[in-house]
Amino acid sequence: MEETMSQAPMQEQEGKQADNAPRGKHSVAGLPLVIDHITVRSDRMVCRVRVSPALRYTTPGMAHRALEKMPSLAHHSCVNENGDTFASAIEHTPLPHLLEHVTIDLLTQRTERSDYVYAGVTEWLDEERGVARVQVSMLSDIESFAAFRDAANFINNLIVGA
Image (cartoon, rainbow, N blue to C red; front, side, top):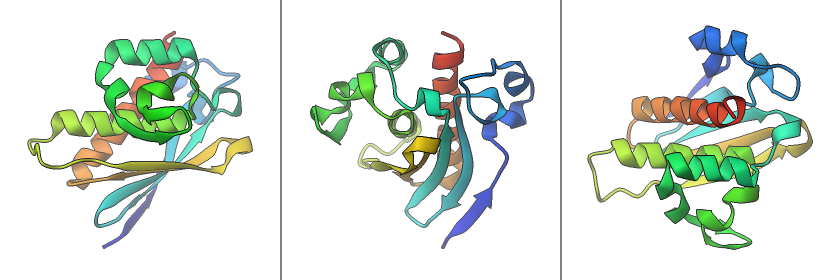
């Protein structure tokens, strides 16, 4: 089963936030990160994400703010060049990679099943233009849509609200 959805940026659906967001270094709709295409597969959700080319990577300040609000991110297993947890990468990682981990964290908090382990993969499709693919395993497409939306809003608020 595969269902594909092209959509306006999720944040635009909330109206005021997109209209009031600062312009300049930001992506589509004035926001640093926008999910612009979603494919639902039987076992995972695949999102194409656009980020502002000027804001492709996290900063130590952004990482600090994210960990203050979501301390469990630091303990996620993560394959990266610096270690085996997300804590070793969060200070300088692609923004879509942060989206992957925030989405997984939200899904983990919201699931009633303690035996399910969420997994994800992030890859640049065009790093120079700030286009990436984020895939996250799922149990429920509805919960996954909500988690991706909330994770994108969380990240945009980290940057725009800073």
